[in-house]
Amino acid sequence: MKENKAQKQLALGKMNLILLSVGVLIIFAGFALMYGSPSGLEYNPDIFSFRRITVAPTVSLTGFLFVIVAILWKEKPKKEDEE
Image (cartoon, rainbow, N blue to C red):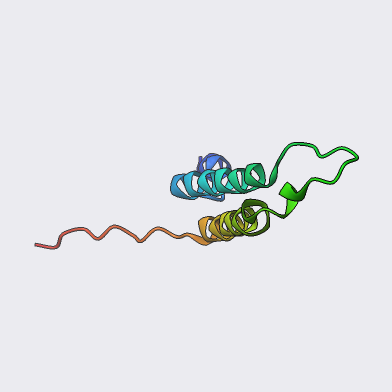
C-alpha cells in the first residue's frame, strides 16, 4: 500500500506547479514582445526598437529565473499550536 502512495506522489508540489506555470507564461510574454511584423526583403528599423532590444529579453530572463525559483521552492512546514 505504501508503494501506491509513492507512485502517485509528484516530484513537485502544487505550489511549485502553479509557480512554474506562471514562469512559463512570463517567458511567453517576453517572446511575444520580441515578435513583430515580418520585414520581408526590405529594411525595417523597427527591429531595433526599445521593446525588442531591451524590454522583451528582460521579461524573458525574468521568466526563466522565475522558473528556476519555482522548481527550487520548498514550502515551510506548518507548525501546530502547542498549548
